[in-house]
Image (cartoon, rainbow, N blue to C red):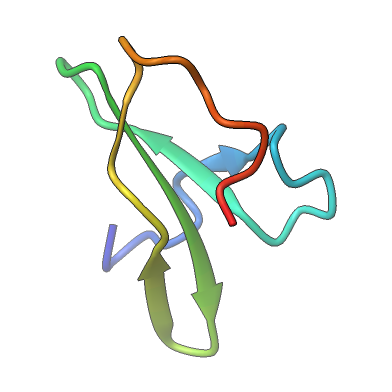
Length: 57
């Protein structure tokens, strides 16, 4: 993720495109995150077995 910060896809929870989601391979976890300048800001670690929130905010 550090070498390829845009590996995720645009989050449907944030249609503006500023929040990306990366589904961690071979797990049930998703990382919603933002890329600000040269920093990756992970908003939370989400277990896909849970009910998805309306927003990551």
